[in-house]
Image 1: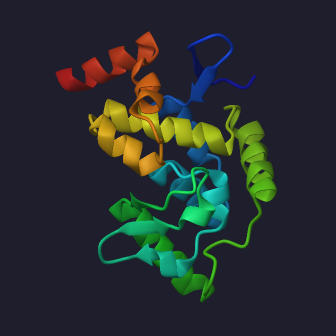
Image 2: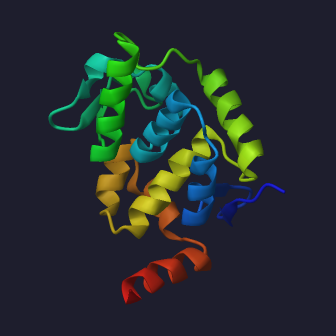
Length: 183
């Protein structure tokens, strides 16, 4: 049975995201190096699948740990720069070195990314889509107390109110955050 956290907001809209255990379970089932990196980049940057599939190596600033997303590759048409974790940058470097790639980081279409994630979703028993990884990035960033305006810029929301929707977590997420503070 596939499990997933979800939170209902206004009429008909649902935000689906993974709690930490589900994220760990999903990530652990991926046995392909490229696919593991694909999922890590999607999760750690909060990029949309269309932005991800157009990602070019020259858009990555390895020194400053930023990815530039040109406006023509974003949903809003507005270019943005996303921050990349040390772990993710290291894995991208290793992947490029291993594959001796140039141009696009991954030669995948949005549909193929969806298929691969669905395959791992079935294997792990955790319901995941590329957009679930984006939602999960946002919720996890807010739980780590990343300022909401920084999260807004990272994921490219035009309005802060869009990002604020994610701050209304499920009670389990709030409990987890408080319990972590006790340790």
